[in-house]
Image 1 (tube, rainbow, N blue to C red):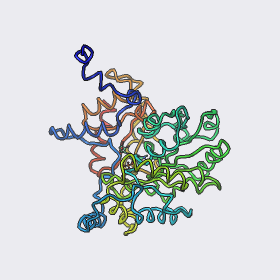
Image 2 (cartoon, rainbow, N blue to C red; image 1 turned 90 degrees about the horizontal axis):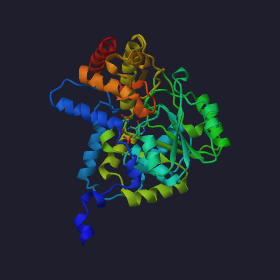
Image 3 (cartoon, rainbow, N blue to C red; image 1 turned 180 degrees about the vertical axis):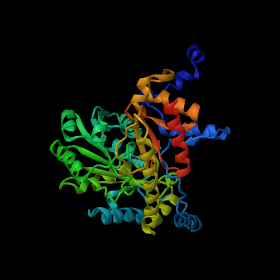
Image 4 (cartoon, rainbow, N blue to C red; image 1 turned 90 degrees about the vertical axis):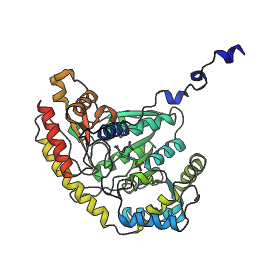
Length: 405
Ligand code: PMP
Ligand code: GLU
């Protein structure tokens, strides 16, 4: 009795060890702050979160409405409706030239969930995963949740933030199990050339690594580039690669929460089993919307991509004209990741970190960016250019004024 009387709620609700080091998503946190300020009447320009600003194309929304009316509102198979798995396989095969079967596809609640599933299905306690930095905020946390260890490998702006094969080779240990690649990259917008990816593939093959290829931005590439799917680069990669993609970015469908993995069938089956226990199927209505996205007219993708390229021109042009600001060549996605170390070195206002710089920018100029430290690259900041040209121009004016102040 005495023990129950002295126990407090905090004793019984103490957090599991895996939660103690878990950071919330910095991108989502900054977006929430910007939204709260906007709701309070502040004229905020939110360039923090990476989310296309276009409405989801009308034919996709219509397919979702039709699915609701047709009563497609029940559980579906956990790994997704057969028609969508088929459509993902067909779309991937058409664009990559690699034949895949629907059984190799698992549809999940967004590509973030797909990544989580892949890590949970493949990684054991103590396994090491090589992650080139700057990296997308969620990679490290999701890897840690699986019990494995992210090995963060710094890359240099001089190399356009690309991982070099010799750096990968030098990071290998007997525990290295996996390589994680993201091209086009969030947060840098950098797109690896096929030969650069091929050289990394050679190391992965030599060292018998599994590879997660996050190709969620593969259709948002500029200047006539193509972003080849990783398994196309060398024979043998199909058997060791999990391709992650989804509709969030390509079709401006972030809120619908549909992403997928494409991988060898036994692993796909395991991921499907995991998902059947974790979340069951992703939203039935969203799956029908995603099916319409993949099988319907594709002009909307080209249109959005053209708009992103115009914005890239505006943003890259304006940022490179600011003395001391450096950024790599943005070949795809919708991010500018720029170096503010010369501004930080001046130490004005006692600001010496990217996080403090972003705080001050938000406070003084009401522009929301995300600190490079959240992406493992202190001294830099990320600006999303998934916003109208007017907003971007106004945001850039404020950033330039802030850097000049
Ligand atoms: N990978 C990368 C590189 C991303 O930028 C995102 C977007 N947050 C995701 C995965 C997850 O996308 P989704 O919205 O489908 O979960
Ligand atoms: N990919 C987006 C970003 O990096 C979405 C936010 C998130 O999922 O964390 O801003």
